[in-house]
Length: 328
Image 1 (tube, helix red, strand yellow):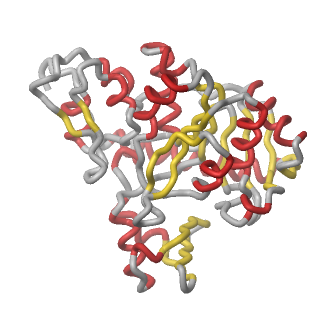
Image 2 (spheres, rainbow, N blue to C red):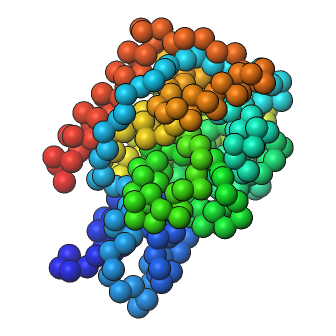
Image 3 (cartoon, rainbow, N blue to C red):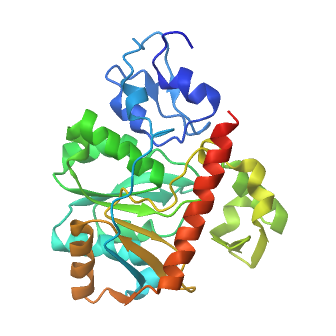
């Protein structure tokens, strides 16, 4: 690559971009722009001066040690309107509502859905209970949520961020290189993530169950199956059928637990209708206590067996990343 110091040369052109949005945020000359059609930043080489800042904030190949786990819970929402939309236990949505009402944050960076196709992700800055609830549920495709940080930090002094491990790694990198964009994030909620998919995966899921893409309202990955709910019926397809649509950058990622967050959340380790919650910081614990005090969640200690199940998946992802990196 010679002396090229930009993410297009070192990441995007090699299909190693997670489309987190950090490079778009960091570029001082705006040589990178959103390109949702191709799920990667568009690059304007005539503007780029190879300063390297975009590479420094890129989370690909960046590793961080997890801090010591403070607590592990199984949780579920006690808010009926959240429970009706929740992916698992509705914990993340309930925590955000409590944080907004407590004044801990003024808005939240979350992933909502496209108005045309319900499962296509669309990052938004939610500042109301209604907007937060509207964004509930998992979307198994990439979204550049960090590209909204500039707007968020310009409008608010305190925001929450809900993101994948790659988003949290990029946020950590931003905190040292461009602290003004990270300091306004007062609550970071991570989501367990084994892999993510190209948007073609949703089309394939629809084809396999005989449904149009715009009729699919919910997708859940449980074990070896992808469970699909449409406006008319439900079905499921083998998870292995989506392997060709896994983004290569996910194969290089070793972080399943999103341990750079204040609180990380997922379905692994808990029964259906509950969320597994791992607490990594004091402010994460305080946010949970405030949510519990408001009566928004039911909480119980996660069993050692269930926690080991979560760690086991984490080890599998780390081993896969090590194998992948040895081969490139």
